[in-house]
Length: 455
Picture 1 (cartoon, one colour):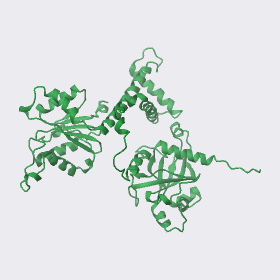
Picture 2 (cartoon, helix red, strand yellow):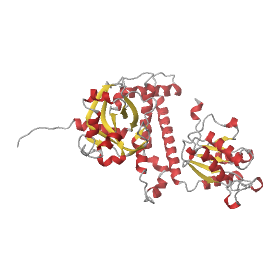
Picture 3 (tube, helix red, strand yellow):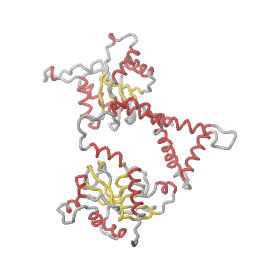
């Protein structure tokens, strides 16, 4: 249980007691919880921490300088800081950070500093850190030059070293907002726990368990078991968290940044930015335990010969109907080669959660490189498409790239929900709101009215 709290945000990596005790004391005086790593093999975690936000790093953990020290410190850093975490502010805190490394074959003006050597060594050893770390420096005076109240001085220096990091500060404020929201939910659940069980001799532990049982059962709407209860509880807690995050008081930590957030952006937005960002806004990974026909799943078609048995049409017919130009167009062959037919799962999430779903509802579509946008049919009551997004999950002969997802409501089918068709393979998943927009469009198409009348 205690391992659930092992998620440090701040780490000090330093092997000199005379150095790390004052900075740990300074952080404690700033009411910042932190973890300390000496850098020896027995002090390293079993796996790198993936929630670190701030690292104070001494460059010389072995007592040596130059390449040996840079290599050792880089190795320790890799064992402590996950390359998947970002952004991380790395405060270089070393007595010799600005000293030049004596390289015999280079003139003094071309020699690297200890800091430059460490950065190069780290990024060469683990390119995954590239563009994920923000390096700043904080002076570490030698022992004879330290003030008597060095701990108090360090408090000011820590704040000063983190100046001009407005965007990171917003992310930290958001992180705090989420934690505050979770704390508020815990408080609310605790306040009602005393009413969760009928016995007079109740305690908080049993009351909290009963509260969670009630929430799980209420969300389940009948589909309540040991296998489904955790999922139902998570759904309910997530809904409660969203309510907390959307509360007006939650903006207090971010409001001070309104001036720069509301200013016109300097420079030109790169053309790939929107696709990259949309990739996160519109899509997500399927997840290891998504279950059969999870709502929002986009399926690729492994066996085209099975397609006609469901739709009564060939897969090429779906490609053709989503192609805006005539099949005589010289780009038709390119479209056939590069487009990938898919099926999109549209089942209501509540039916799945409550165990009411009998069949999976699927609608046909096409994933095609974004460069084919002008040839994609997205207009009309039976057609639609999402904005271009960066596809993060390549498949054979279809690399990671910017794409658009089209759908055609004329190609709809239902399949037994408890047995996934062997000719379909999950590819990626649409997030809830983009999925809801396709589901609403599909419902509108199915409910459209046509009638004959005479004047």
